[in-house]
Amino acid sequence: MKDDLERDLGLYATVTISMGAMIGSGIFVLPALGLKKAGPAVILAYILAGLVVLPAALSKAEMATAMPESGGTYLYIDRAMGPLAGTVAGIGAWFSLVFKSSFALVGLGAYLLLLVPVSGRLVKAVALGLATLIIGLNIVGTEQSGKAQSIIVTAVVVALAAYVLNAGVAVDTTRFDGFAAKGAGGIVTAAAFVFVSYAGVTKIASVAEEIENPDRNLPLGILISMGVMMVLYTLVVAAVVGLNDPNVLSTSGPGDGPSLTPMADGASQLLGGVGIVVIAVVAILALTSMANAGVLASSRFPLAMSRDSLAPKGLARVSERFQTPRNAIVVTGVLLLALIAFVPVVELAKLASAFQILVFSIVNVALIVFRTSGVESYQPSFRSPGYPFVQLLGVVGGFALLTQMGTLPILGAAGIIVGGVAWYLVYGRNRTDREGVLGVILARRRDEESVTSD
Image 1 (cartoon, rainbow, N blue to C red):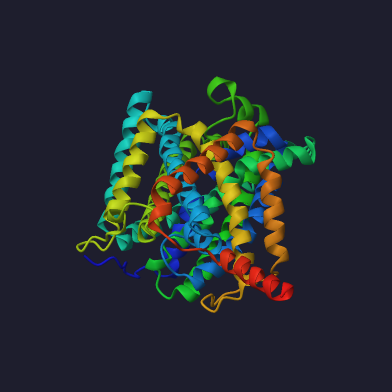
Image 2 (image 1 turned 45 degrees about the vertical axis):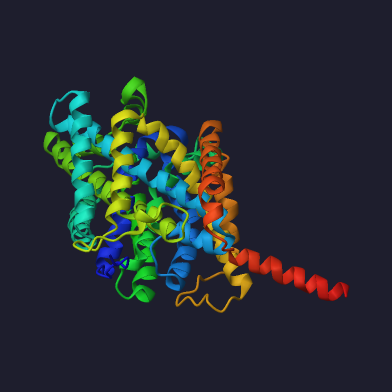
């Protein structure tokens, strides 16, 4: 059975997979939570989060053209820093993305309840059904999954554009009074919580092996989707703030907490009941799209780790019939279904976001390692502008946001690190003798010191 994947994703599919991974909870669930922390300046929080993500997006765009293979974050950190760091990054990124997909599907419930008054148990059953459908779609073929993603994302973007345009004539400017009353601290804290909204931008690097003309389409796909989403987030969140009573956004959710349906709350100000129905349908499509992109990208982490002998070899097998990593998708799907069925995914999503911030910071370090090493095998067709200052800003910004996440998410990220180290020591260490580029740099310096001392 051959283990190579087919390159059948063009630029448009690349862009829509990346955008589909971002259009979800970031727009349809999180704005009210951000508003509670930053007030109307939550708009700036989304811009700040995007700016912190941008260096990692540029770094991944460069490394993806040098290594257009499945694995994304895992692959770059592993090749830069060695298999121990790669194992931690691979397992952590895999869990984080599956958590996000689970959160997206469970988050469908709040919008589904706007359409049909069903019980909470049935909402979970719907989420499990959608998850099963998404798993099957990914097994049948990446091309089919990519086409479905393109259709859904295009429809969602058109609907969001219409939402913003209509909001322009209905926004109450007094909603922006006291714009930054909660200060810079509130903006930074809100940025840390909405950071996960942009984390999907680099998911496309995980399926680099399946992209046509990766030297061109990978960096373009990442940068186009990032630019579009920063503009879209800013406009949509501004519309949500301007359309809604801040007390409704801050207290109409479960337990008098932030609203879980802020987009629908705003839609009622535009078109009444019809607007709520339209936005609920769009939200369901968007959250399904986000979950699909998550399964597509996260399943490539166990595939890549298997190829490097850091996970069971069966996960590297590619289906002869569908040309997809069926076993890796099935394992990812089983975890997805288990999380939806048995775990409070909303809380786990918060823990996963802390690890995402950490990984994005380390990705910037990985690029610096590659550039510093001067190894001949590293030949990217795209180079990140502003190196190394952009990457250093990404590291500092990432850790600054991480400090705002609170104790529990940080402990969760630490737990993922400990689990990754344990897996490497028990399973991976005896199966691989590779070292990363960082090891080459250290060996070179030892040799130089030895020559100097002689």
